[in-house]
Structure formats: C-alpha cells, structure tokens
Length: 237
Ligand SMILES: C[S@@+](CC[C@H](N)C(=O)[O-])C[C@H]1O[C@@H](n2cnc3c(N)ncnc32)[C@H](O)[C@@H]1O
Image (cartoon, rainbow, N blue to C red; front, side, top):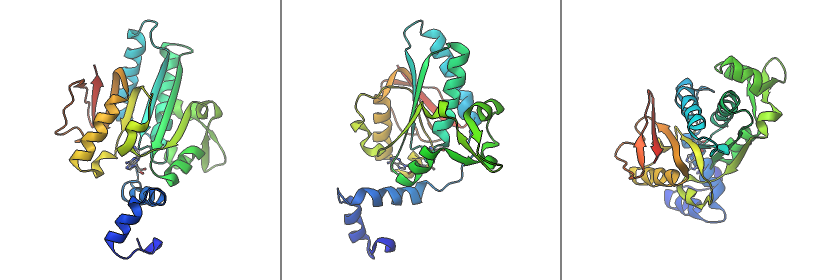
C-alpha cells in the first residue's frame, strides 16, 4: 500500500478496483499474498495422477482425440506448466506417436509470468525432476542454470488472466486443468465460482486437479470425483 502512496484501506481498495490502473496493483497484491511460497519444481503426486489418466484417455479415445490440451491455472513462475508439458510429451510419445499437445499457463501476476516465459531455473530446483524430464526438457546454460528446450517452449504459452473472470476465456476446452495452491486464498463463494468456471472449460471426460480441501462443500452436477493421495480431482462427464 505504502509503495503506491496509499495509507488507508478504503483508498487502496478504490485504487485496486480502478479498471484502468487497478489491474497491475491487484496482480502485485495477489502475488505478494499467494505467489511467494516455495514449492518443489516437480510434484510426483501430480505426475502419478495425470500420467495414467492421459494414457487411458489416449488409449480409450480411438481416433477421436486430436490433441492433448492442458492448463496450469494460477501457474506462478511456470514450474507446473513446464512439468505438464514434459508429462504430456512423454505420454503422447509413449502412447500415440505424433499426437499434438499444448499447454497454457495463466496467472494474474505479470512478475510470475515473466519468469515463467523465460523458462530459466536454477539446477538445484530441477534436481526434483524425473531424469527423463530433465534430460529432454532442459538445456544447461552454465553450471548453475538451465533453460527449457525450444522443442518444449513451442508447446507452451503463458497468458495473463484473472481466474475470477476466467469465463472470458472463450472457446477454451481442456483435457486437463491443474489449479493448485491458488484457491486456498479465496472465500468459499469465489472458490466455488472459479471451480464452476474451470469445469466449463473441460472437454467431456476432462480432468480438473486442485489442492487438498479445495473441493470441500462444492457440488457440480456434471462431475465425479477422482481424488488421489494429496490431490483432489474430478472428471467432467
Ligand atoms: C503459490 S502460486 C502456485 C503456483 C502453481 N499453481 C503451483 O502450485 O506450483 C499461486 C499463484 O496463483 C496466482 N493467482 C492467485 N489468484 C489468482 C487469480 N485470481 N487469477 C490468476 N492467478 C491467480 C498468484 O499470482 C500466484 O502466482
């Protein structure tokens, strides 16, 4: 607040709600509240849930699956989106050579998106990746840093977007949406609104993965649960 010269909450609230000038400040505010947790680059629980799901989806689809479309909603500095890209690449190669895949990462924070787009991470963070993902997903820059490969970067895009108004993302239908460590900061009403909206962006049979506790008290007629271990998930019928 003080950084932008606001010293009371009401003035700050009005500034953040201002349509033209408020968005960057809202983004920075959210980033400072939700974005600074230190998370491991790669979460094996996510891979264990999504990899077999995608394999089944490819195998069960006959010739009706033309691409794998994945979305990291609230992608932070990009680790989740890049992990999904490596996962989709590996699964597509194993089960349907040549199947196209694309990953979209969205976040409200321009700071987070800048880092995500850059795709450069310290080697120390990448040490949690499965060896195959590290080998094919990243190229070493020097002894301390590595950068995502061009092949992977071609399949991933990052877009600034607020999940609270995600219904504006028209025409986007996904096989997998992952939204973790984001919803926990929202009141139940907003959380449920975001979840409803994310389900609307799933293809039939698509999978939504969220964090533990995020689905509590939420009901949606079109989904059935598919939770596993530390992740809550549901599938659109
Ligand atoms: C802790 S990070 C989580 C990153 C990633 N999902 C993960 O689990 O590794 C939370 C991210 O959610 C973003 N975020 C919070 N509210 C958001 C909203 N309404 N729309 C888009 N992004 C949001 C923050 O900017 C932050 O980058």
